[in-house]
Length: 573
Image (tube, rainbow, N blue to C red; front, side, top):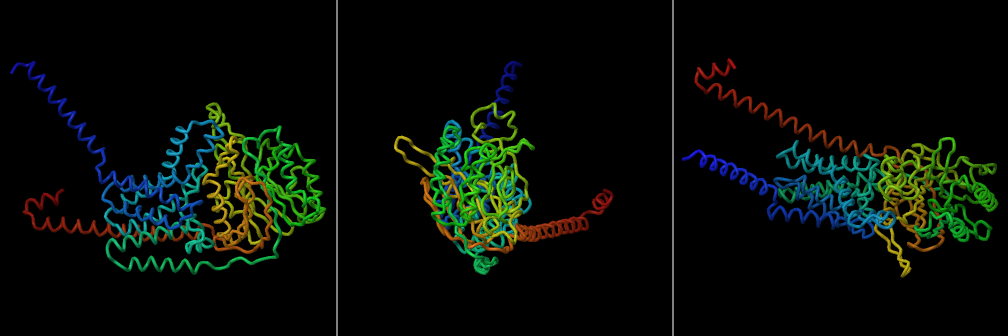
């Protein structure tokens, strides 16, 4: 054969091998129909689970999501990837309402907002996917130890990581789906993460028991459910009821930060509150929502002093949200201020006087832009109104108001119970959260119709969970809803509809004392998780030692049975 033909044949052979290798690689990447069915099932399970959260609150649907999750955990391959799709879908469908803050108020195109939300959901669920991947690597072949002990424990650690790393977003905790169910009894003992752990254990034990046909696993799940009914004890003691009035101004987000409308906004709130300031009606607490006064405290000190004097004359405490600039620190704060009746009649308002709370956990990009010197150059998304606040101190004094002690949280902060715990003591008698959820709704001027997203409902459900965890009433005052008061067991005492001006009057029973969760925080849950991982790790260590010993005995047996020369050679090696 001529040299040219041989070279040509070699080139053809090389290109053919490369193309066949490429085809094999593509075939490996392309999922089969059963795998596509698994991914589709994962997406649908995530969608179903989103309806377990508020506003739908179909609590039972979360068990369908968890059932599919455990089914994926028992697959022979790609468990972590498929669980990532499921949990990412759950996060996406549950928090899709966030896109409204981009599309409605920052001029971000809808397609870009959807992409951002997909990436955000995948990020939130990546902690859980990584935890499942590591459990698969460490506990390969040990299905019970992996899926019933290791995965639930690491799932809670992933929840905690997602809620704290990079400021955190602890919004899609599965425990929030169980308000009003038997699992909610765990709230004052273990907090929301303990409820999530119980859901995982009950579902996992049931699935494993039915899969291997061992009924004792199912019996253990039923026993765990029965234990949750015992945890619903009373840990705090009631005090004398107080009368609270919450004012919902329903100021449209489009005009809230317009300086030209500041007088109109104040007039709206004052007219709704006028009967109490003039003594025509009586109350103990008069509460306005977050940033109700649309100006810096520095500019309206005289106005606040007048409101303080009027409140003292009518014997009530006036609490409002506002912004404060501290010249000494050159810092802006999102604040809660209480004036009127305080600890003593001599307490009068002066600029930067006490009896206030500064928000400590700011909303990323909404109240504080990280690397703002760089990012603010790249579009309106990084220049939303009021996005230059500073963080308040971690530990702050309770607000004193007409004989009660109030632990405050502003808006997003109410989703961080471990941070709230630092300011909730035995002497704390009420919880208060001021919020403005107007960013997460839409208004059509042509039809004068409002549309409420799922966000404010979920925000209110989180506030209810805090009341249950600390067994103290939660007062929630908002600009446009959902303004509500929740009792110590999470019962809704009263609420105002969305997008409606109004005044909510309710009698609240303050409570002192502490729950186990209020004293120990997540230490109880982490102790249980540590025990679960200790058992799983001990089992893995024993298994490794047993396997190593078995291999050594096999080598010794082979050594004795082999030829003498071979045995001598092995011994020499």
